[in-house]
Amino acid sequence: MPKVLPAIFSYEDMKSKWNQDNPDEPYTRRKDLETGLYALDKWVLRVDDEQNAIATVGWKEHGSHTVVGGMLASKKGREIGGNNRALQDAREPQLNQSKPLVAAFGHRDGDNARWISNAKKNGWVFSQDEEFKQVQSALPEAVISDWNSAYPNGNWAIRTIRGKDEFAKCVYSDDVFSEWWSVVKAKPNSGKKISDSQWLMLKEKILDDELPVDRKKYVKYSSLADINKRMVLYYLKLGFARPRRRPEAYNGILEEMLRSSNERYDIEDGN
Ligand SMILES: CC(C)(COP(=O)(O)OP(=O)(O)OC[C@H]1O[C@@H](n2cnc3c(N)ncnc32)[C@H](O)[C@@H]1OP(=O)(O)O)[C@@H](O)C(=O)NCCC(=O)NCCS
Image (spheres, helix red, strand yellow):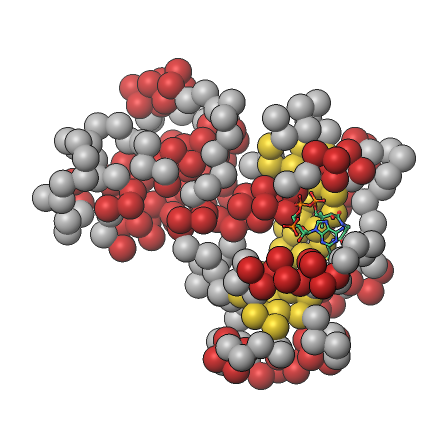
């Protein structure tokens, strides 16, 4: 089953893995997009069962917003399909939750009207849209005018960040967590390494309210007070960004989810 790797790649590292896995089909991006307004410095990769790259997407955080783009699927990736959704779901939690997203939409070889209408369904607001005035106020005027000049046809758009509900939806059916969960649970401070896939699973199970299982002691994610939710997300992101700090981040998560840490500790949430 294809998966998005939990690692975050630099542009060079993403290309190097892609090109190694797809020697006949190297990753390409328009030269003029590689620097300046549309330079992207963080990338995620979707791989097939052989762990070969089949699709990728990138982003770059700026002061007021995050630019996203660069999506490409290999021939095999396009046969498999579902790359857009899988990559976006995996990228979303990595993005600064307080900044709007900016992207341009120009499908390389397909039907761009379909590509744009898909984007609109996903919450992207284009300059011709009614809500644009409101959405653009989230960004400095200079950013708006830079993008207007770069895309005079108006095929660029803004989207506010998705809520956690969408964030939580990347659960893969071949996930196994029980063994490592009991190990980590028993010895959270043992310095035992928590792998990328374990961390990804932890994120998914927490956001889907499957973990922690002990509901007498812990409040499920969706019932947490906002501040505790934000802290859980912070620790999850910390674990993605700094793998060595995962045991510490894990302890932080449990602390935030403790009934006694929550204003709503008395809540009935299905224990
Ligand atoms: C963009 C791309 C990665 C999509 O991946 P995919 O796995 O082939 O497509 P998905 O299964 O994820 O399709 C999701 C949506 O993408 C859009 N899409 C996919 N192929 C498309 C095509 N040829 N033309 C227009 N839109 C297309 C559709 O909106 C589709 O949803 P829909 O079928 O409900 O309309 C792939 O088409 C690709 O590599 N294109 C070339 C690079 C490119 O154009 N990137 C985007 C630059 S902005």
